[in-house]
Length: 273
Image 1 (tube, one colour):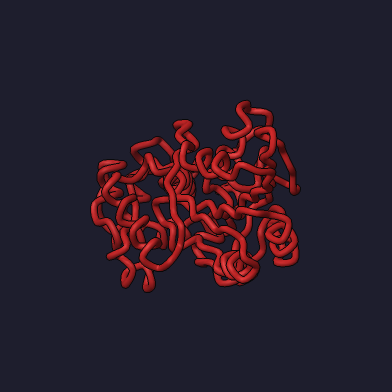
Image 2: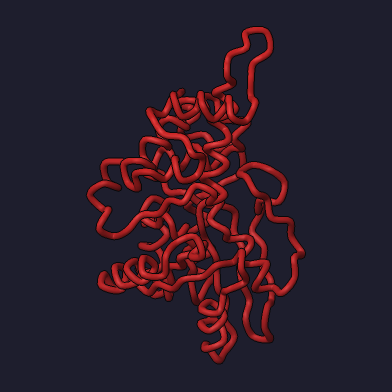
């Protein structure tokens, strides 16, 4: 994997200047996180800017339907113990009551901004708030439907929201940055990335891959068996197409088809993963 691939996104990401400008224009800042892996995707620059400028910062654990309620409660308590406001939502199921409650409680004209890494469900959440699917939501990074520019919507009489392109801190988790800033088909080394992903998943939640695919073993063995089971065979050589199997692992991870999530007590493992 090239160093360039690890840092260069294939679509527009929000700059630090844009983060600052939009935070300053806001009364409330919502940071949308993937509830499965919130610590991998936190943007501490965004958080510092919001808190240093007296803005209300709310961490939003989206995709909470993919995580047991008890684990969501653990994360909410973990962040609250550290002085951070935290709520849970599931844009895919339409459960965004906690966000609506915060917006309606203001009782005055407010501007709320929404920030988040690619593929955390930020645009789905914004579209649900708007009450209609007026913007296409893309399943994978870098494909049509991803927020390309900063947009402002009025959702209630006195409530405006700012939807921003994806944002990732410069110190973002390398593996997450790669798979969230390009479609699986555009990843230069899908095999290496999938192997790292499998190793990370199995380190934190052993057995997740076997539960998803009925396959166990070392990462390369898993990819070979998966390719054979799916009929992904290379013409000419007759060898299993393990690169296609690798892309399948990446897609399934992003979609939540591989049951995987982290807990606060995984923090030591997360820091090494």
